[in-house]
Amino acid sequence: MKQIQNFGDQRQTWFCVYCGGPTETRDHIPSKVLLDEPYPTNLPIVPACQKCNAAFSLDEEYLACLLDCVLTGSVDADEYKRPKINRILNAKPALVSKLFQARQDAAVNTSFNVEMDRVRNVVLKLARGHAAFELNEPQLDEPSNISFVPFPEMCLDVKVRFEAPPRSAISPEVGSRAMYRLVLDEPGSSTWNIAQTGRYRYLASVGSAIVIRIVMSEYLACEVAWDYI
Ligand SMILES: [Zn+2]
Image 1 (spheres, rainbow, N blue to C red):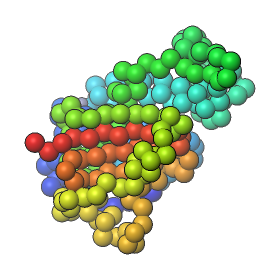
Image 2: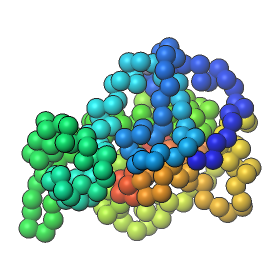
Image 3: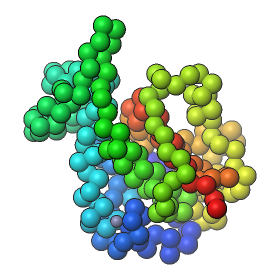
Image 4: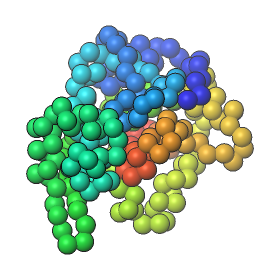
């Protein structure tokens, strides 16, 4: 990924961007379990505390495996698309069992009962990381909106609106990476950042709200927003 230095207020990144706790470690955004090897160089890194760093990993693993199972419609090892998911599920029979029990076979297609709290936990964590890294505006409060929906369940006009960057009424913080991307991007170019083609892309914008959009595996479309008070 194109790496841009942050010239924003450094006091914004002197704490865990997930809980405001001490900076004890660093966390990749997006998490590597959501990407394939070889990993992109220059992945964004944000400060985190040990507790948060460890707390999300099981839910991230669950979401990564769930996405692959949904996309293949299977929990059979031979059918996973991603070698990494194969490795994880081979090592974790309890997770395979959980996904197997969640699978709902119907006449037309297969679906999965999703543990929504776990997916929400990951989506919010990722959005907090992007807000801190791209906008230099860490968001510790609960968001005013958080949603995630598979593209196939999204009607066309909603998808078009989702893909278009929100209109910004105000500019990103001076010195933030988002501001530099605005300056560096060709006029009219997309403001989506591609972490890994086909696997993970995201958009971070400021306007009447801070809005983070994420697309995982070109399947799960997520949006998290924090309104300005
Ligand atoms: Zn923390």
